[in-house]
Each structure stands twice: as structure tokens, then as C-alpha cells.
Length: 289
Figure 1 (spheres, one colour):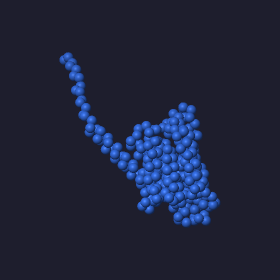
Figure 2 (cartoon, rainbow, N blue to C red):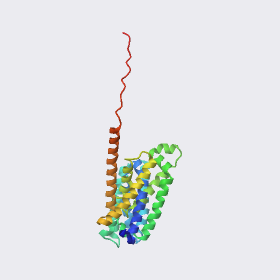
Figure 3 (tube, one colour):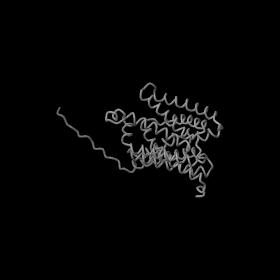
Figure 4 (cartoon, helix red, strand yellow):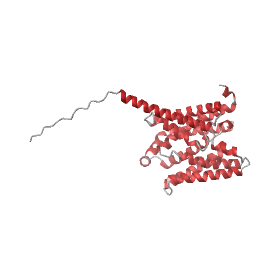
């Protein structure tokens, strides 16, 4: 295609495909734990990391990884000790992260609205070769962790107390999942932006759940949907000149709606095609007067 004669488009596609594959592989565990919105909270903390990177003239992606990982670990420890409810901890992340990020970005030498917007809403076409290498390495680590530890992570997400009784290192696995979430959010900010990052974690999983039953099948389908939406989002956004991140999310939502409607129609057709069951009358027992 003519679009891919440019190096920045090739880098954009590679980055999008990596995120489209890695985000749903983690998102299925977050959905299982009913923590679908945690990506938004960590995304706001990652913005503080971006501000730190810009202020110190260091890599904003690497700084965001470190800061968001610290924030994710803190939230997990607060949740585990039960001193603060999960939704309150997420609220603290939302407010503190976005406020700290805006202040630090405004203090940096690169203080401009474009600097903030490209991290809030994504800016794939400005992805540098160094960013692609970092995204590729971190994305591979996320995939290895989520696929390699699938049985243990599924047990923890399904029933934490049972997993603890079974001898699994629950705290270590929870902290691993928190750090992995932070890493995924950070590398995805170049694709869809920090404000939309949870979409690629949740929407492909929700779409896959419409047509699959087992955990393994849902995970594979979600990853396929994520890759398809991310790749199509890059191409479509380049053709019609729209933001790649928002376009990717809209396409993912469109896939979810199409799969949900198609699945409901298929179930309805199957019910109508099946012959009605004949109900046998109950046995009549005559009793002596």
C-alpha cells in the first residue's frame, strides 16, 4: 500500500499491532476481577510520569512506566490491606495523576498543548524508532507473563481465597498484575492515548465474550479482535485523516456491536429452527377413596 512507503507509518502499524495484541491479553484478567476501569486510573498516573520525563529531558515513556508502576503497586497494597476501598483508591489515582501530570508538563521546557494532547489522545505518527523498540520489548514481556502464568493468574482472578489455600503466591501475582497493567497502559498511550487506554483492554474482551465460552478461547478471540481493530484503526485514520487512537476505539466498539447483534440473531435463529418439544403429560396416580 502507498501508506507504508513512509517509515513513520510502518512504525505506527508495528506499535498498534503490538498494543492490540498485548492489551486484551491483560484485559481479560482485569475484566474477570471487575477492575475494568483501573487502566484509566493508572493512565492518569502515567501522565505524571510523562511530566517527569519531559521536565528532566528523559524518555517520557520510560518515566511513565516507572511512575505508573509505583502507583499501581501502591493501589494494590492499599486494596489488599483493606484500609481504602478499591473505588476510592482509583479516585485518588484519577485526581492526583492528572493534576500532577498537567503541572509537571507545564513546567517542562516542552510546555505546549500539543505535548499534552499527544499523550492524552495518542500520537502514533510521531513514534520514534526508540519508542518502537521500547514498546516491542515491554509488549513481549506482557505477553510472556500473561500467557505463561495463565493458570495461576486465572485462579487468583476467579477466587483469591481458594488460590491462597492452594499455595499460590497471591500477593506476588497481584503485584505482578498491577505492574503489568502499568506497563501496558504506558506503552498503549502512544497508540490510543492515556484517556482511552482502557478501551483496548476491555472492548475486545467484551466482544469475545459474546461468542466464546471458555477462558482460553475468549483470550484468543480478544487478542485477535484487538489486533484487527488496531491495524484497521491505523489504516482508516490515515485514509480519512482522523486521530488513530480514537479511530481504533470506535472500530473496536463497532466490532463489539456487530458481534453482539450477530450473536443474538444467531441464537434467535437457532431457537426458531429447533422443533418444539413435546411435553408428556404427568402420570396420573389413582388413589383409593
